[in-house]
Length: 226
View 1 (tube, rainbow, N blue to C red):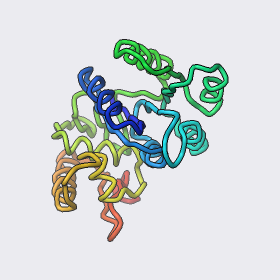
View 2: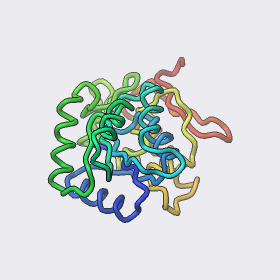
View 3: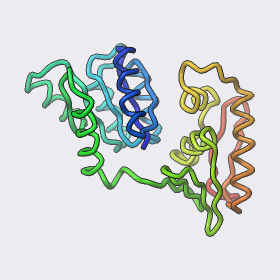
View 4: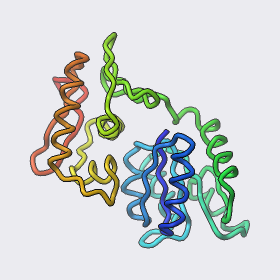
């Protein structure tokens, strides 16, 4: 399962990431509201953990803008405030649940389990685009009767592209999301893994293809005729 943590306290964000990764989650962290909108709007996440007090755009506004963009990803709101009015404001903004700081790791995991149970219609073990299916647990890519295992980086890129078929994703966004926002990975790394992924898509006999949009990035076309 892939979780986005939007938290401006870097130490807390890192602590949350460690808790989640220890429980088998894949985690991306960003530290301001605008980044939360940009990343959360991709539709590539199973859950968004969203702090209220954020620079640039506060958590309430982030939730509102994601819901207006028809992003249905479950949102768990984190707040240092325990006033009922703040909790109501968060839920009215589009959050699905909230936790008041401080909280224990056990409480966090309980809230995430409850969220994914309630939001079963938007949390999947597979991701499908065209004739391709990506298994989010095994990292297998399947087309018809053909299946191939992806490496971790191939999987990360495939998940981003299959999560938004037809949408153009920049090389910078792929680096930030597949390698991490503080990575030293270069565009050459992206090009290499795109090449590997294209070969594996061809190996399973898919009609989908990864198109290069010159000077912009890449997009997944769901069929050769698209």
